[in-house]
Amino acid sequence: MKYYDKLIFELSKEGRQGFSLPSVTWPDSLSSLPSGLMRAKAPALPQVSELDVVRHYTNLSQMNFGVDSGFYPLGSCTMKYNPKINEEIAAHPGFAGLHPMQPAYSVQGALRVYKELSASLSAITGMAEFTLNPFAGAHGELTGLMVIRQYHISRGDTKRTRIIVPDSAHGTNPASAAVCGLDIVQVKSKSNGLVDVEDLKPLLDDTIAGIMMTNPNTLGLFEKDIKEIAALVHECGGLLYYDGANMNPLVGVVRPGDMGFDVMHLNLHKTFSTPHGGGGPGAGPVGVAAHLAAYLPVPRVVEDEGGMLYVEGCEDSCGMISGFMGNFGVLLRAYTYILMLGRQNVRMVGPLSVLGANYIKESLKDCYELPIPSICKHEFVFDGLKDKSTDVTTLDVAKRLLDYGFHAPTIYFPLLFHQAIMIEPTETESKETLDSFIEIMKHIAAEAIADPDSLKTAPHTTPVRRLDETTAARQPVLRYSKEV
Ligand SMILES: *Cc1c(COP(=O)(O)O)cnc(C)c1O
Image: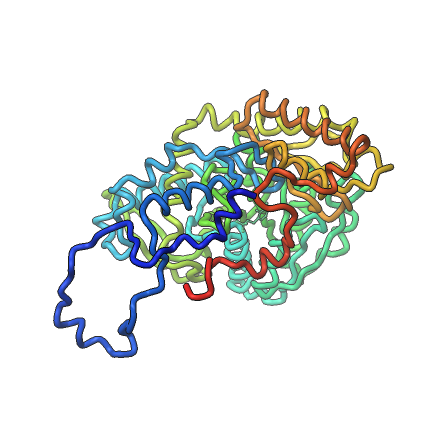
């Protein structure tokens, strides 16, 4: 509570300041500004010393939980470590000082990064071409669906306005499809968590634009019928979209392009170690098979025979989906990460993330309900505590974890289980960290029986306790006072 008390305390003191600027004489040109645009009085900024500011922000940073402060096993989110060399490269003046309106000849290095990162992503995924322009995973989904729509329209196949989405899909899949103007058709999962091929077959006809699949799906399970599904969907004239936000366990092992996917997106802010949380910035590059390359968005980077790089449009493109060419600083970080690992170590990413997830799953399955016991990929789902005799819920377990210095896993998603706890450790954590997480999870399961109240009232050690999370997300109060 200490820091929170400080936070609501008004630090501003009339006349106190943490800087001194030289006095300014305005150039004549400014006096001709329209009077409506001229500020009549000084802005109501807090008046504080440098020390006040430093302490304020340092305290604020300590009230939060980040991947730099502790283990963050958030399923479907891949909170892997963000290497600090990424920041160093992104802050290099040769990159950070660029302006998006500079002529191509003066930004050859940046365009080269764009081109080489695209090529690396192609090698990792087996897709022929990439655009790096989309700003997020969901933005990539929309872009990929626009490519699919453009493909059908360009062939005069205008009836294909329906897209198949599994019931286990991430919520952004149906949302992106709806934004793209497609009608959503749901395909069911079987009790083993995989897409039901028998349920899929009758849905396939000449109105189907394609199917959106996540593999491994949101339960962390590999869709082993993917080859058959790909053949069925292609046979009916549809295309396969791959939601690669959670590509992590496949990196270096299998490639969506080889599974039969035509279009996909990646989340660089998950799989490729760039920071995320708080809404961005992110990057959701979209890769396509060769026959769809013409429909990718513009602008694009192309190379002439002399090795000069240019930015250009393309007639068949699905259009422009972002200003300029994406979040360049994020692209740089992801490219740094790939180069830092190198070809050999990139191959270790997938297997290590899978090993860690299965290690936790097997270590905790006596204390937590494991509805799908098979080998998982990078993440898995518990359905609450094994002992159902207490009224301790998944929410209580998640809140109690905070007291022990761990971020909570994803809870109540996927919707297939009522008390879902979805755990994704990622490959960047040590065995010691996994072991202490396992120990605390076991301890919490024991507490649920011996002292359920300590869970019901958790967290006890955080700056704020249980919040109204919906209102906090929907109506955040981001200003410290009404005046400012
Ligand atoms: C995170 C995620 C997305 C959405 O990515 P954003 O960058 O948050 O838009 C889509 N699909 C899956 C499976 C994800 O885990």
